Structure formats: structure tokens, C-alpha cells
Image (cartoon, rainbow, N blue to C red):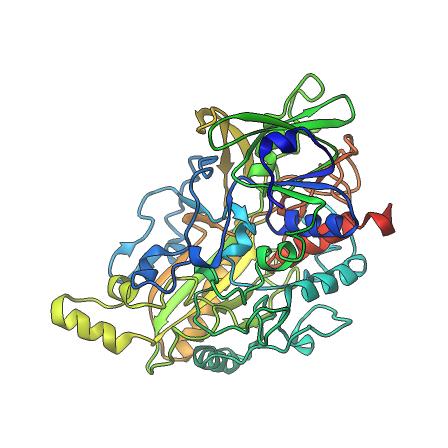
Length: 552
């Protein structure tokens, strides 16, 4: 239940959770079900179906209705110079030429949402487990949790969410079936699948947190292909309509939204309280026995670094200078093309099919990370007339209008996705010169594309072009991570491990030093998994780490 901040300030809780995304809400679900008294603090607002604008005439121009009030917390630093010999990895469009025309990488965006549900509010719903090989293998740090230890928690999360999929078509072990059957492949997906099969590549159904049948009072998907703009029907399994819906009215859960957590107070070995600002810039202090930080891979290290004191002069949990280091970002290559026939690519689901053939470690020469492929039309925002007019069809006036009508539904595209390799240059620090509206230093994102990342990008671009060429589809646009920082699957900035010398938290997300502090979000993942979507793994880790009745 919602509670005024002045009342919450007068109470002592068993747990305070900072952040209501995939990790924070699954932790809140677990703890509330175990009858702990929980205070959930979120910087953004709670979204409701009427906030999404897919029923309005200008839906295509509006996109996801982001709440910008507290989104002024990060800045992208100057990025690396581009190699003139890598022209084939430059982003381009047939109407505009180079999309990042400078001599250095362009810092575009860290894609996220502040609000109850976090970035699951605008994700496509991909619901992947991490391959067991990644939970053993790492380029820089070992996972302290095995696949077998996560299996039951994966299964629990899949059933809370309502994942649709085919257990026989996934590359990871699945001891129990998905709760719902897979979605039918769209016409566009079937068409693209022919290109993959022609090149001896697989093309199977993608497990999705999108309902193929009614489930727990939520309707089945209507295949509008706009998951990224928010789902007003609530058939997409974002964390707010799944984990949060099951506990939102619980008496032992108190909720504070639009509250900006600014500082965590501590003693030598214990966290005491958290300080937070309201929208009106009033400061409040909240106390608890235990604290969970789930603010995301950029804001979590920022909050820890801001919480320096005489007990932690380098920042909270930063005795070994690891907070903010080992930033892992999305590596992607997208190729969009015009198909010879109308395949109604504005219908269906954004990512109903997937190619797993290169997902395992060392599947790509030189690189240790794998990658995977799926459709790109919806995430590229090519499901409506406006972007066809801007990006697909050339011309002007009546000819342009007729061209849009002729082309609509013919766009087909492939997204290759991977994770960057951790390196010393990619990290999150505090800005020396930029501050937010609360007069606190911004998080500064430093990003670097390594030689191994470039090899993965080359491989993904080659596969995309080969498949589309075999379909005789004409590519009109390509873009990727080589010349543009644009990340969705961001990990690693407070990674977990066995030893405090090479990790920030242990296998349960607990600080190695402050035992009443846990971190439960994507920042604790020590590696990615070949571009697999991380939300289900974040939720499984959080459910396991907060299962106090069994594990404590």
C-alpha cells in the first residue's frame, strides 16, 4: 500500500528496497510472501494502462511515455576514435548517409525506465535463461552460482510471469515445461525463417513473457507489435503486472514512489538508514534492519559511490575500487531491408523467433562471447507510416505518399545481439563537473568497444547480410554499437563473486563487508550470456537471494 513519506520515516522495517525494477520487485514479492515488513522506494511513478498511448492517432511519434523527472542522473563521457578501416561497421541509412558521421563514437542513450516495473515496462518480453556454460565461463570473473542452483528459481519466475515457449526448442536445460504454449510465428517471422534455413541456420520460437493464452486474469496478446511502447492490455509480463500485482495490497508492503534515494548511512559494518528526496526536494530518512539496492547498473554504482563516509572513503562497498568497474553493455548490429512481397511486418510480436546457433561461449572466432539473432522491425520502430516516410521511402509529395503505401508491411530486419567484453575503459564513475537537480554528481558512463567486440560485430553483420541477400531483400539501413553507444542489456558494475578482492557482493548479493546490505539487479551479473536477455536471470537471482526461510 502507498504511504506518506513522513509516516514511513517514523517506522522501522525489516527490509528497505531501493528500486522497483526486475530485481527490486521480485525481491519485494519474495520477502512480502515471507511476512517481512518491507518498504519499497522508487524514483519514478507507477504506470497504469491509460499512460500508454497506442490508442491515439499519433502513437507512432510518442513512443514509450518516459518519466523524465528523475532521469537527469547520467552523462555519457567522450568516447573513442573510430578506425577508418572499419567502414563496414558504420551506421547508415540510404536517405541520410552516415547516422554517426563524426570521427568518434556517438553517445546516444542508456535505454531504461524509471518507474514501478523498471525497464521491463518497455522490454520486448524476451524471457531467456542463461546458458550453463556462462555460469562456469567468464573472461574476467567466475560466477558463484551454478545453473542447477538457479533452476527452480527460473521455473518459479517463469510461472509468476506467465512465459510462453517450447521447452524442446531452447538451448538450455529445462526440467519443467513453460506454463504457456509458444506464440505462432508471424508472417514476417516465417518469411525471415526461410532465409535462416536457406543458410543452414536454425530459427525457433523465442520464449517470451507475453501471454499466448489468458493467464491469472490477464488477456492473451493481440499481436499489435508494439511491446516497446508499453502494454495497455497487460498481456506482457512486465514486473509491475506480475510480481507487483500479487503483493501491491499486502499490509506488510509500503510503497513510496517519486522518491530519489541520495545517500546510504552506515557504521563500520552495518547499514543504518537511507536518505531520500521527495519531488518537492524535502529530505527524509528511512530506517530498517536490512537494505536492498536494486537501482540498476548505472544508478546502483552511483548511489554507492555517493555514499562515501569515514567508514568507506572510496564509496560504499568500494574497498577494492570495484564499484562501477567492469561495465558490460549491449553489442548489436541491425540490418533492415525491403522484402519483395508484403509480409505484414507491422503485425505479430517483436521477437517471436530466435537463432541460438552462436549463443555459446567461443562460438565466434577470436571472441569469447557468443551472440544470437532475432527480428528487428518493431524495436527499430518500423511498424507505422511515419518512419516509413522518414527512413524507408525516398521522394516527395504524391510520389512519396504512394511509395509509403506500396512499401508498408514489406520491411524485414535482423538484429544480432551480444554483450561487450569487460575492459578497463568501460565503467561508471561520478562526474567531476555535472550535477542533477538535487545537486548531486551525475553518473558518468565510460564506454569502449574492444577488439573482441569488433570481431563479434563483424560476425553479426556478416550473418545479417548473408541471410537478407539470400532472400533478395534490399538493405536500406544498418546500425550498430561500433559507432554509437546505445545499450539496453547493461550489466556488471557491482559484480558478484566469491572473494571481496575481485567482487562487490557474494552469491546472494550480500556485501562482503556490510552483511545487512544486498544488491539485486543486473549490476551484480559478472558476465552476459551471448546476448541473452537478462531479466529472467535477475529475477531468479533475487528470488534465491531473498528466500530466507530456506537459505538462512
